[in-house]
Amino acid sequence: MAGCSQAPPAKPLARNLLIVTIDTLRADHVGAYGYARSQASFVDEVARSGVAFERAYAAAPITLPSHATLMTGRYPPGHGSRDNGVHVSKTVPTMATELKAHGFRTAAFVAAFPLDHQFGLDRGFDVYSDRLPRGPDGKPSNERPASQVVDEAIGWLRTGAAPFFLWVHVFEPHAPYGDASDRRPVLDRYDQEIGVANRELMRLLGAIDARETLVIVAADHGEAFGEHGEFSHSIFIYDTTLRVPLAMRGPGINAGERTTNRERQTANLVSDPVTLADVETDEEKKYQIVGDLEADIKQGLIAISSPVARALIGKHEGDTITIDAPAGQREFEIVAVLYEG
Image (tube, rainbow, N blue to C red; front, side):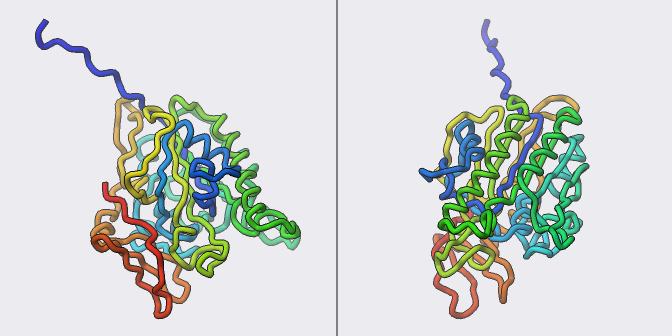
């Protein structure tokens, strides 16, 4: 009969969202990005069974501002946190506030003090677990092991049904890279800590329903090991501390895909629509948090470093990138071209 045709098959939709952030993980220490000695089993598995973004960049080379960008879709001037310890704006929508408003169960399990609830990322979460152990002197530690974080996250998953939004943060790759008395080369110890965190995260991957869950994994920033005269992170905005792994898998994502044609900012994880099943109708719905990313693109912002002495700000102007830096610190390589979707 003329005019009759079959409707296209329905696109698979995720009902749940899992975001995993691994602190201080350089992209070039991950197998999915060509590292032969990779111990990043979780990241590699998500990339293998989904899509990896080859050129992904954090918005700031420090934990709280970078995570605030990831959760709000805004750069530091937009969400208010320009350094660890600087509170995220109470008026900025977050992924958690938006998904909770649409009926999702929400929980976060974080591993380090810079993400403590007092700094503002707890808004919208039904559960925000950030309690740290105490050291021999009775003072709270700066971090807790991935094993504890993952145990709590798995326990929460067993307490209820879909739909849920779960954020899990692990800290192991961060300095001091294991036992301070270990005399092995620093990169060996760094890789080992990556392995510790990723093995725990593999347990988390086994605890979710892959048919219904969109899994996203990213790092908040990388790490410098003497390149450009920097050790650790938070000062300069070179690739060593800004380029991060970013991979995702889930319903409707073809296994083994790679994106190489454009750069990706972690800010886009929220400013781009996230397609999940609508809680009430099971129909496709795009959840979008509209931050100030459009304004930032017009300004050409790329990355902002911690305000140690003075912030470094990268700006995209035509085909060039200019680093606004204090006198004597203007020799910077091009770190990224802002994503333009």
